[in-house]
Image (cartoon, rainbow, N blue to C red):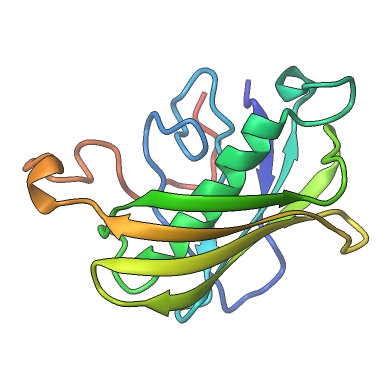
Length: 170
């Protein structure tokens, strides 16, 4: 069973990004992960739509703040992958503003925008919006490129980093 329900947004110009096998946020084979699927506009924005299961709550009916942080982190990190899906960056700094409680069992929209890309470092903004468009949480991140020598030499697709079919992986 999927731990979060990830749905496509309606924007036809967006292209699906790769998922991993075991990432907590996007790993489609992670037994405890959110299994979110991201798409991008080919330039400077990524999106994902999802409904977070109640098992990820902090307070009853509210997504745990750490899970919200993970979602914002992943969303921002993916904007630097738009032109190169094999470009991996880690978070150097993240400032979060929790504006409203993020409800479980409610469709959410995650949006990430590239602010600045300087090659080895980048700045990005991410946000979570409620069904009525209300901003629930947002983050500003400084991202740092992961040194290539820390990434496995094997083919990344073989390791599970690829665009998966729409069928859920269970």
